[in-house]
Structure formats: structure tokens, C-alpha cells
Amino acid sequence: MITTPILKLALTAIAAIATAGCTSNRAVNHDGSTTEETTSDVTDTVLPAQLKINPDSMKQTLIPSQGPAGMMPKAILYKTSGDFLYNVPVQINADGSLISYPAPSDIPENATPVKLKSGWMISPVGVGKNTTFTTYTYDEYRKLEKAPSPEEILKAVIPGSRVTITIQAPMTLQQALADPDAVDRYLSPTPRQ
Image (cartoon, rainbow, N blue to C red):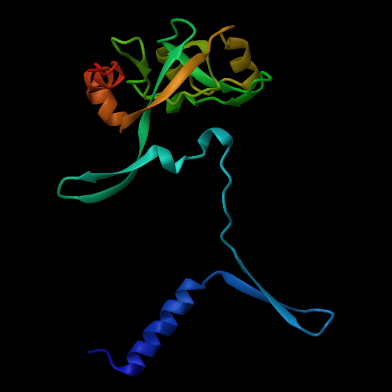
């Protein structure tokens, strides 16, 4: 059983830890009343639009004997305006400005998307509605010593290349890549009776 002095000490320590890094500013208003504003030295990081995480696209996954693993993003399936299976994707705004592109070190050995029987693709490298493709292949891009400049990336964009449609699969990227047939079954129309 915890005695009262120890409990008070523990609660004080917890309160000190919880408010560490916070400051309080008390101001006296014109009418004599006071207001207090609490701030923290921890700042929120605003991610670029293409990196925002939609909590609706996440699900909790359990790893056997390890407990909850947290939220895992679901696989994005997509189709393109042409055959760009081996071309490095980049993100371009509607006005043609570059949103983002990978560093050569961001391209894994297994970067080539999996083309499903249904014509849809699954990519281990992120794609989305603003994706267009470059003349760089995954293999040559990965071997570059440094990332091309934004100007070089824009010059390498294949005219008319783009992702035409995306859908979210009810499985994680790892599950989809491990069992492409399951993804095709998901995409197949359900027979109606």
C-alpha cells in the first residue's frame, strides 16, 4: 500500500514531467482581470500535403505474440496513362510545379511495381493523384550519386504520363505485395444472385 506522502511525491513528479518544457504567461488585462496562456517548446510539424496521413486509411494490426503493432497504411492500387512500370514516379501540381521527388537512396531494390492480372498496379514506392513519371528507370536512378535538381527532374517528366485512378485496398501494402492474387480477388466483381 502506498502511503500518502509517497503518493503526493509521485503525483508532484508526474505533474512536473507532464509540464516540462511548458511556460505560462500571465497577462493583466485593461479591466484588471488576468489571463493565462500556456505554451510549449515542442512545435507541431506541418507535413507537406503529399505526406499527410489520413487516419481513415489506417488500421490496427496485431503481430502474433508481439501485441499491437500500431496503425498500418492500406495499399494504394492504381492505373496509369501508359506503360511506366519501370519509371521513377514524382509528384507534380496541376500547374506543373514539382511537389516532391525521391532521393536515389529512397528507391529500394524491389521498387518495380507489381502489375496485377486485372491491370491494376501496386507500388512499394508511393503514388497518388499527382503522380507523373520520369525517364529515369528505378535501376539507373538508384545508382545516381546525388539526386537530380528539381529542374532536371522536371525536364525528365514524360509528357502525358500520369496516374489515372487510385483505390485503396482493404489490406496493408505488405499484405498486398505478398499476395497479389488476393488483391485481384478483391478487385473482381462479386457475382450477384
